[in-house]
Image 1 (spheres, helix red, strand yellow):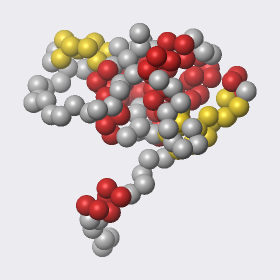
Image 2 (tube, rainbow, N blue to C red):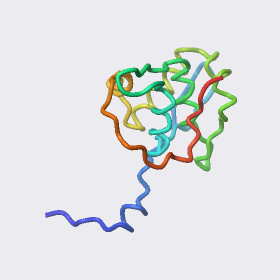
Image 3 (cartoon, helix red, strand yellow):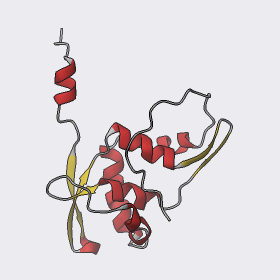
Image 4 (cartoon, rainbow, N blue to C red):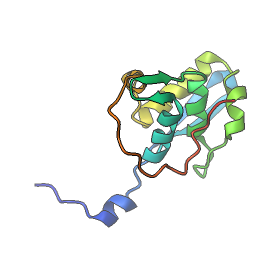
Length: 138
């Protein structure tokens, strides 16, 4: 039987993975960091408008929005701001998709997750909203 983890062990675990991605179109390599649970929730919330049976998925600049949240510097600090999303969306689709794919995988996002965003859900009570910018595009 495996050892049960304590609260401190869980909260102290370093569980956010990073991966370096070579992007020849940009002339180098970027570090991609998986989203935290709060960041993923904010990203998903920013990708949906409406509620209940009247939900629409906002796919506009979805790749640029996720890449902006996920690309970090050597100290794991984001290098993009919400204001960079539009300009990032003007970059090569192939290059952006390469980074987006890694960011999606590291964050546990799949194509099915994006499709699921648009499906109606049961009404739930709202909890605390995360204090994480979802990087909405302008």
